[in-house]
Length: 179
Image (cartoon, rainbow, N blue to C red; front, side):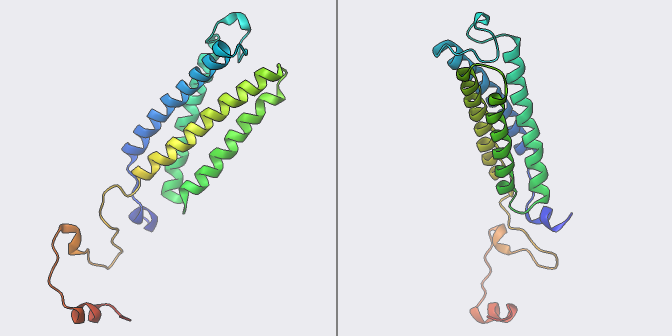
């Protein structure tokens, strides 16, 4: 195992279970956003007006794409946590830029301006949910063992076992150079 893995163990089960929950939330954000735009505001998003408040099959595909995006983002976060210093910072930038692309894309399509803004808003909400939830999940998935990292050649502290030996200041300073 490399130094990064030793200093920052990643609890993959916790990360990926949080990623699955994020995927469900992302899909629901799309469904709720579509319902809000189509049902409450009367703005057609992703389907003609006669398709109903939740749209048509395109809405389901849109929601599934958001769920897949959340799972891909979870994989990216896992990779960054294992290999990159300040992984959450880089992840935030990457998700922010991908979300920006998703927000701008509706304006490149030939649709009514209201539909473009509504779709951009739904994309922004889904991107923000994915980014914020996965950053939060990753914080709980890193170093979750509660034990301090021990470097090669060092003895683990007895403190982690709940035992505090009686050591005088002189003995402590003798073992620590420069103190």
